[in-house]
Image (cartoon, rainbow over all chains, first blue to last red; front, top):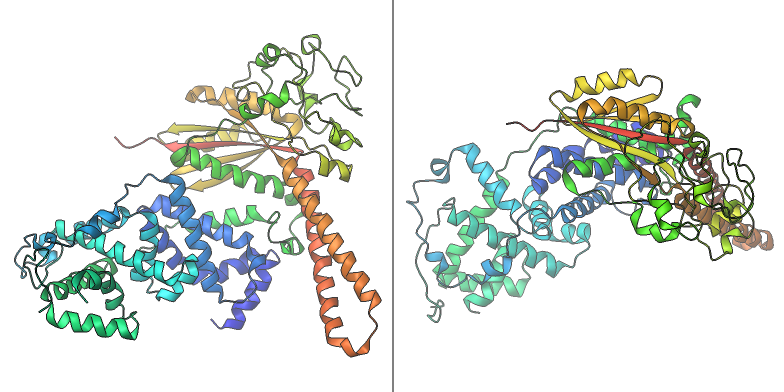
Length: 208
Length: 400
């Protein structure tokens, strides 16, 4: 879809043309829904959140000035809607990321199964997906959003920063912490098969 | 750089988002530190695992639901200012458009009841507002959902059903035979329409009317005893037109084995009103739009339907008034902006600023458009005052 067609649709949608709006979002709805699904973890909530996001986008369409692409603008709204919704519910367990980040010394020595015994063998495929999704849901939502945008949507750090109105450093550190926490989680579930396993001790020189 | 310094950078490292200097240092470290190299590997696997999640498909009902909600949003109140221009729907639909928009907000609230958040008691916090003249115990005995009586502190122009007329306060216990039907928000014009009334220190709260010996055992009363009334009166007072009465709505949630069938049954029985179905996943919502005059009758009838399910309507009031006031404010601001711009255009005759002038004229046209839209919104909101909404949510029984 060319940009000018987008613009045309935006104009029509602004004037209350619901069909134009639906056309406008048609190429984004799957992505939006997937964001919502990964953030909420179930279809019912995802459906609610995604619809809420679209409604919000629709009703604030007048604010869209075309400074950014429609997609960027839309995802920003979607993310905010998702975040609001998640905050409102606050029913997910919170992983205290600080703890996991502290675990730098020695914790990696956890025994991992034979590397040839890949994650696919450790768990059935479906179970694996479920475990991954569950682990994501245990992240605090601020971290979850950044992670989902990066890993599932492939956003650049700059794009995430823009969409969430964060500075670049915050994006970096949140993503780093989210991944660190997930990594710990995955390791405890024996989903990872690191190539090197040994047990460093704090105070030993890791630098050779 | 040691491990502690490197570790926080590894995430950005695998994304190639490190600055040149950082990148050099990290790479140098990784060549020598197997532990951090292993960490990089673990992070990469972590990322790959997350990325391996399959894309999910949209639920089959997603589009239909969204469409319904979008339609309900039309015209977007207070936001998409230009949306009103595109409204060329069937005239018969128009009457429902705004109530539907109001209902949409309500529906979200109902969804919240289902899963998200506990309902908030509505009237209680404002209880104090309502008792300016009416003793508490009288108020507490009120059982008249849908009834809002005027505050009586100003000239009430139309008050046909009050045995005691006049601007004075009416002792609630003495007004026994108030006909509830007539006390709907429309028939009465409380003070905000009256000049100056909004400036008084009395809140625009309605006093509760006397016990109205309800003809039928109406189910629930409004939460608490208070009457939630418009909290804003000054602005609309200046408009001098509209009673900022709250709009009533009621909702109930019913858990049944077969939501669709049960909802259909109730829908058929309530065919005298406009009933709209709003399906959500596993849940059917009926939105029943009734003229405000019929509200009590509707509540009673719906409650009798619901008795079979052991459910009852919870009646709430909606503050259409403040929405109205906000719209009025926006209209005033827009008009001011427009006038200022028009005056400026008038004053400028210089030909050397043609482009600027053109821009200003464009802006002026845009302002006019927004103004027109806001005025439409305002009118629609006024219409909303005439209509009340009852929402029934049929939820499936949780699986054993």
